[in-house]
Amino acid sequence: MAIKPDKSEILSRLPSVDRILAETVLGEWKGSSFTTETVRVILDEIREKLLEGTGITHTTNEIATEASRRLNIRFAPQLRRVINATGIIIHTNLGRSPLSEKAIEAMVRAARGYSSLEYDLKRGRRGSRHTLVHEILTTISGAEDALVTNNNAAAMLLGLTALSKRKEVIVSRSQLVEIGGSFRVPDICKAGGAKLKEVGTTNRTRIADYENATSTKTGMLLRVHSSNYKVIGFTEEVSLEALVDLGDKYNIPVMDDLGSGALVDIARYSSLKDEPLVADSVKAGASVVTFSGDKLLGGPQAGLAVGKSRYIDKMRKHPLMRAVRPDKITFAALHETLRAYLVPKKLAEKLPVWRMMSVSLKEIGKRAHKVAADVTKVAEGSGLKVCIDKSDSYAGGGSLPTQMMESRSVCFSGTGKRLKTLQENLRNGIPPIICYIKDGKLHLDLRTLILEDDNEVTELLLKALKMKED
Ligand SMILES: *Cc1c(COP(=O)(O)O)cnc(C)c1O
Image (cartoon, rainbow, N blue to C red):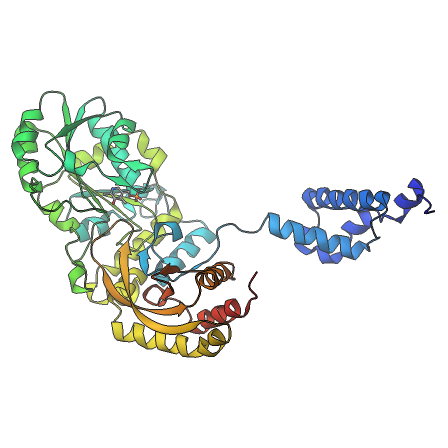
């Protein structure tokens, strides 16, 4: 008959918390109260098992190692680097635009020490962050005035609030856009305290529709770029010029939300075309033009508002400005990103987004072949075929949804279950590779991989291919 262990004898077998906390294996976790807490939890678990008669004793080193392992998992950085093999360049879920080296350096500089964020070095007194990118942004856009917010949604919210609160905002029914779930034009109007006044129909809106809707209650004419969809067929839209004429006639501001917008003609760099130019909206006379910093611009998350001083100034002075102003790190990165536009010829060398859009099929193909060749043997050994396929890549970020860029992918084919496992293994890699399955093949699109080291990609692939099926 087994003798039930004596309770005090069991407890004496457990090492003390203090001895465990002294273990060097704890490394960076030493001295944290969360380490003490974790060690206590582990000791409780061991004690319980010992009392049940199923447990074994552990050394202080083993317990400290386990505590360290649990803390590493619990407090691991959640924002992790991933490799984007989806072929979608401005992938909102994957953090939109990768930044240029210069922008990254500027962010590090701004982060490390103090900066002239709101200090006028010439006069030796308080300055304004609004001046930081003012010169470059007005120069590139051709606008009189400019300001920056945390994102484009914030720029719109500020515009609506500062210029049209408690008034009516006239929008065409063809432009009541939803951008990815939480952003909808009717909702942002409401949030800005403005009353939405829809005019026209889904496919056709005329200037007379706008004019008939204008009254003393009108605060703004709003045009929203249909960035992520297209209305085709029997359609009619009012030009920005016509809206500006109408606005001038009744002294009503016209706000033009371009979504992504482009500072240079995209057709000169890629097979893409027709992304509206910020400068065109400025030239057409829009009171305020808003666009994103991290879409085609290729910079940090930001909202850029350019236009007439009379209106931009009202926005800048509105109390909401304080709530939507960007930080020093954003300004640092944005300024360097904008500087790239001063020499448009070299844009693709400087900004990753433009590099990915303009890279030649030949280069993509060449790199795809090299990666494929390096993984073929192992892939075949695990029952998968490897080939290079044509694939479709996109600008993404809600820009140019109907325009596909031909690209090349390293593809794997095999059973559906095997492909799913490989996709999952790649997603669990360090760093994870995000790719997609289409028409019975797993695709790794090389267009969005051009920022990566191919050897790293190959190694991650080999590792994922060699992992056992669960
Ligand atoms: C993307 C987009 C927005 C929102 O911009 P964020 O920078 O994501 O806030 C607003 N309007 C349009 C038309 C867009 O495409």
